[in-house]
Length: 396
Image 1 (tube, rainbow, N blue to C red):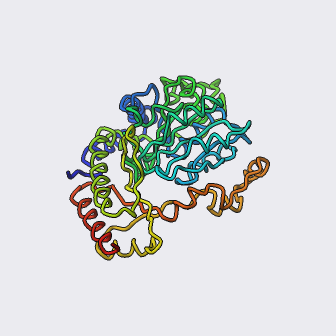
Image 2 (image 1 turned 30 degrees about the horizontal axis):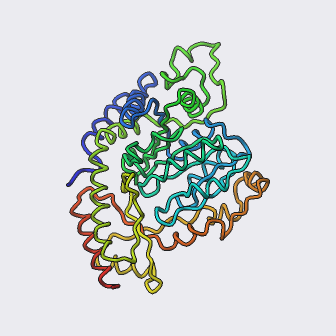
Image 3 (image 1 turned 30 degrees about the vertical axis):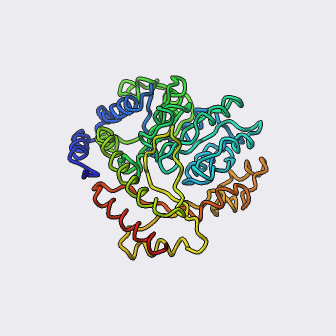
């Protein structure tokens, strides 16, 4: 299989947007189209486009009613934006450990960390695999929590036949360059709840009262009136620009083939890794469909150093191996509470971000090997799988 990451269709739609000369009257045509078609593709009632996948999480937290000093449960093994969005909402991220087999948030540990201040939980579909959403929704139901899926890495992944983005109260997607579909930057929040959708629309659009479920932008009739009152609530300027929406529209039309290419790459790499019992793959439960944002394995050998394995893989022609992100609470900004004043909320909550907080994640993080799957020619992925097989043979 061989496809273009960016095709003629993206260029055609981008030029259509540019041909509009950025005139306000027609400057959100692709945005409206993207939201409508994304919602239809995912099988939800509403989709609201935003500038990136961190803004989406922040807006979703605000829509869920998370306020200053509240707590939000997140996993530590993921890109730090998940917890950073919690801080953007002036709330306190509470880190729940991960499962040793799936590398995803452990619902039992999350429940142990619920307090009277907990308002939401953000389960992350890491590497393209959804966590145990039945268990997560059970925790949320027992404690009255909002669930915001972080599906930045999980386009068309599934859990018990339901697509990522359709189970939680809201779901966040990213269109950043490494994701299954991209517009360079951008993001989307999905929901089936009309009330949440209205809040998302207004909170991401500077709190304009004239926008709503069926109206994403203010019009000339609104603003060409000296009595116009624009802002009915505090909001942020998180709107996704039309030219980025144009590119995303084209990528959405091609999403099946883009995801298929990554799936074939991930499966090829996973197949090669089966030759080594000491490369422990992320376990994919039978009820889940993996989206293969990356192919990840835990290096379970004390006599083979992580860096030595990567060095040999690259010597043999490999494209490189990515490490897992440092655990969020061990990043300097969190560890040293350098949070632009928001550390006061964390200190009041008694947060202590130090080693020992999530022992499973701490054991896993330095062992994880992430292999790329964004090969748009699957022959390249097959060559990488062959190089992985040779690397394994070298260390056998």
